[in-house]
Image (cartoon, rainbow, N blue to C red; front, side, top):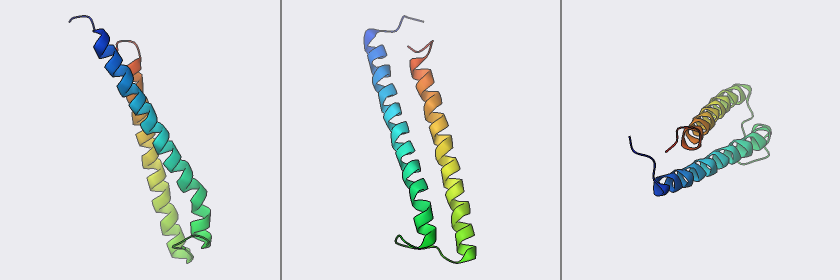
Length: 89
């Protein structure tokens, strides 16, 4: 296999930066959702979720979405490691 070229290393660095930005964006979404959960449940924001059953359903859905976002974060971190770690072109 041939040695990586300067242009391929530069491109990998650019892609790694895009992955970092995506991870930051996902983290921002996660934090925003976390800060709004209480207000959504208490009814101080648009679309209040007040009844007991609805609250439980909403919290289950929120927990599922939060877990999925965490898995996305993990995947982005792994991708970043592959782009920047030993053995990257």
